[in-house]
Image 1 (cartoon, rainbow, N blue to C red):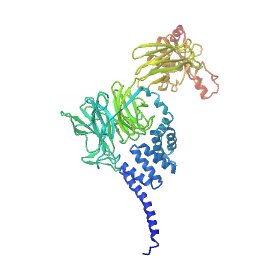
Image 2 (cartoon, rainbow, N blue to C red; image 1 turned 180 degrees about the vertical axis):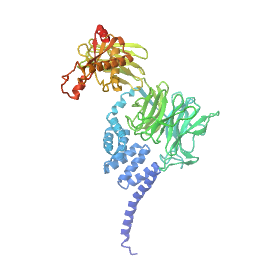
Image 3 (cartoon, one colour; image 1 turned 120 degrees about the vertical axis):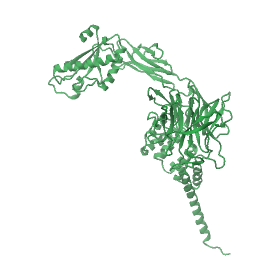
Image 4 (cartoon, rainbow, N blue to C red; image 1 turned 60 degrees about the vertical axis):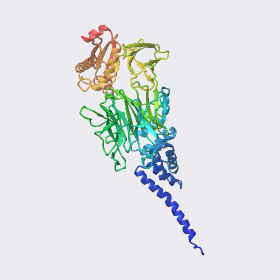
Length: 636
């Protein structure tokens, strides 16, 4: 048979077209999987396509798919592929930088985060993470306080958010997937709520699904028990019976539900939370110890960043409208997985000062406000995701979850009490020279007890502090005004050296001491709010030095009549003294005197042209120490 001369050419063209279209078609199919959040399938398709040759789009998408499944090593490989083809910028550089933090590569992560900043819409979260990379060693300073022990739960692919329940733990978990009954996002089975008893040695017994009607065909968990144990708040995928409800972005948002404990011991009578919404997620509940405040995670409109912490209050007739927890707690990143212990709130965040991934933070109420969140540090936090912390009322033992072993698993936690001490140096405020031998008195304001010590030859001192305690530290030295300052360990969860430097002022007998920033409105002697701040500082000095007698004097510039200025300055001095007396200063130890324009500190007298700054220098309030008999003349 005669061969067709064109046949080899056609076969070659067909092979070229097939090999070209093959990976391109895989990428197109993978892109479609990404749009419906089927990340496990998408990643597998991108990786098949990449075997045919480099493709920056496929590498970036494969990295994103792996990252969404928390497969950091695979994601890093694909980001590196894309970076080799063209340096990453913007969100891609930011995500790669965050991922490298998760892998403990802080230096490389810092460079990528710096590169990402110019093209990010929300720059603050990247700047915070750059700071975390630069100061990552601080996360390890208190590690000896914590003992972390894995809790083995055989047969579960993942387990997280543990909480005490009956004689064991309630937690969220997934079993291996069977057939088509799997979450396309991860390729694992859907999450459910499980219970396992605690064994005498601290391990977990055989797990079983939570009894009752809580677990359904899709995701359930995490959950939180009410303080009386009668109500279970839990998270559930938005579904309509057997159908998963998704929004326009193919996301099935989460919703909050509550179940009541039945006489049989099952959970039933399931009711939705009043503020669920198909357009956004509401989940991951925590209940305050009084049972009246519900904390939760949501990406509802009006938040600070991606996912924020919100709260609702039960007013006796229902749950009030959600209130965002505010910028002290919420960042441009994600805040999630709240739990409560006493007046403390623990949560996880990708923002704040962070080791990488989700880190666990503590905040607590200080009056009506939440304290600045504190990172709990290593080994509670790692470069991977750490979240779902529960602690007992003593704060010494608990449980949490972490992906430090690749998948989310449960861990037991034991906490040693933190160590606190105050350290500082006593100096002359005028010269900056140390004051050796200064006598220091530390008063425990909670117990009413005093501890004394003497500053060293270099003016330095160090003194231990108790946890959760308010103090006042007083310094005394010959020729100096006594100086006090408040100290506190309340709200400090980590071992801390509290800085307590003290600058002491010489006793102002010959040279009066000027009180900075005491201003009055024109032709008035009322104490303005900005002046009140400075007078509060003066009140502390006067109350710290009850053995002295003080004269508080007021001066004007040369503009205006001599008699008028004398009257005005006297009124201003008396107004300041009245303020100090109202704030606890002994009225028998303070007198007011107005000097008008009679004691300028420069040559700005009548008929001499001066600048406004020179006039301002003469308009001053000052005090000095006087003899007791001078007090009487000043009061008459």
